[in-house]
Amino acid sequence: MPESALSDLTLETCTSIADIDRDDWRRLAGLSNPFLRYEFFQALETSKCTTEVTGWAPSHLVFRKAGRVVGIAPAFLKNHSMGEYVFDWAWADAYQRHGLDYYPKLLIAIPFTPSAGPRLLLEPELRQQLTPEQIHGLLHTLTEKLGAHSWHLLFPDSNDQKLLQHDHELHRLGCQFHWHNHGYQNFEDFLAALNSRKRKSIRKERRQVAEQGISFARFFGRDISDHVLSAFYVFYQATYLKCGQRPYLNKQFFERLLEQLPEHVHIVMAVREGEMIAGALFLAGEDTLYGRYWGCLDEYNHLHFETCYYQGIELAMDLGLSHIDAGAQGEHKLVRGFEPVITHSWHGIRHPGFREAIENFTHEEAEHVLGYFEDAKSVLPFRQQEQD
Image: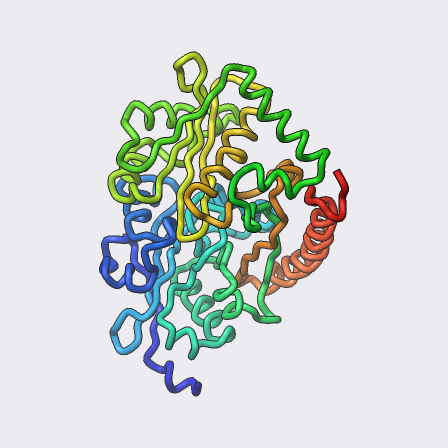
């Protein structure tokens, strides 16, 4: 497609989700992915979790062609690197040591959510017309216009990855662990696919949770009472406070999430002697269950694994979902049937000297990540030709 076909394409930003027409957003983002819903960003903004004060100033990208909205992307101007899960603290420190500003930066991402998915929400015709050179050029021009020192696009899906693939841009790799339903009808089917040692280990963990007098209750959507949500929020806060950190999300965000997107929200509560003692919140998409937030006040043997992973697997199967994305890190997921997957991010660095240094770093890092990925695959707990 000749560049003249894109001569009237513009890229601008909006400083509030309210400045983008809800119908335009829904037309481009769809309704199946909870993290792309208009209401999700609205809940973040109205609860004041994503504001200039918190360092998450909304700067959503809007592509226009002949004045019509043909693409959007969730984006924020940031003055720190918290809540991103693609860590660039060392880059910021290097800038500071040389007396340079690293922030603000333009972040194209879902706040506090290390889950891969669409980021460039484009009309099909525009996606076919755009080339990686053009999309990177647009982002570099916009970054300079905003007075930002870099742009960062985190966790794109495979469709966006094709549009971002460019040998001259900075590409980072990461590794996460996801669960996939390989035709299992129930939890026993899943266990049967594991080697005998791992199968026995998981059964022992589940038995020890039950022997502590712990049972589980599920709550969905509008059936989640304020009592349940309040208990969950206490657990969620505890996860951060144990690390000496304030939680990213306030209770108002979760209240708005339940009000506006109840069809996506599931809470699993651990109950002991009639009291809720721990909880995990999941968001359900079209084929994926996203395990996002968890917490407890007291420590119980194997409770985290049961609440977040085994209960999550059972919930996913009951909902007919084929995939669990349980977020970042967590090598312990590997021995519990979660498989390694490669994640991606792209980075546009304006400073030429630092760009070269960071490019060298990303190449070395990618080699380590790919090696780790292969090592992780080699120790998956699934049966080969084992005879029980």
